[in-house]
Image (cartoon, rainbow, N blue to C red):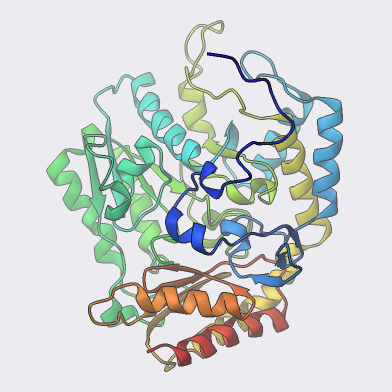
Length: 446
């Protein structure tokens, strides 16, 4: 067989199926490909120049808006200065600087960060740290992990195992053993059309005690939850719920992990949900907004007492036999530092505080619109549940999505739930444009 030389152009004439896309129906995409060529501010721009308002911040990640010049320039400068250095027994100045500033941005008591490359890697890393923590303290029998119904924790084996969305797991089992799940802390009968944290969810938190009676708390390593359920449908935590989980975990010596991949970097109006809700976990996974989506990056933020448990052995020994080639990649660290600069210099969280009441009020004006059975808001997040069409679950959500795109607004649907998570720099007029497009779309579908 003759070896092919590297070529400047493909011989495949840019056949779409050369790229097997994630979470995409490839045959449908081939019939109507959606391509974006550029982005700026709140908008994507198609190859033919059409502007589309981004109602999803890319994929929950472009929190500071598209095309932030400071971030772009930081990446460009980093690429010219240091293209790559391993983080295995060596490092670079930006990694040290970004870790320190990120911990300053995080809740008090979070003193360390382990860098990875995505939210999925961050979750699997947090789960491994949790198990290794107990082993380091002489409790190797603590291996069980507890997730929650409708939780989404990425697509790694560990994250998928603790996730609570069945359709994501169906093709890949069996997954990790020794995993249990809490119920979703939401009851539409009493919590529908919630604004922020609803009342009455403590029973769902106390269900953790029931699980521990079944599984023996001395065998449980960690509980992992999204402070606000994201991809599973934007379910905010009821009042007192996270506080109750924290107390139960403390009582039984179990680590509490917050998956802040979506809620981190300002989504709820505070740097992290842990600060917004006043509950500090032991470990926090983050990604998405870390670099404003410009370079893949993730991390696990680690409380001091967890880190110190690994530091008791010989100083020449590797404390955690875990890592990735691209952990703390120079370009990602540069983008992360610049993102923190942008948040500070543009006072993004201060500006966001002024528009959050407008966001909430306009979202809930859709109560009573065609097919709407529930609306949930938390920070700059919103979910709109539509009544399923008989015999065609998901059809209304898909049609509403398509009609909004035709109107120049990008939203996301998970079945019959429309999910919104725009850049934090959104203005009043753009809020109106998003919800007006949804309202018109709902009026057109049967």
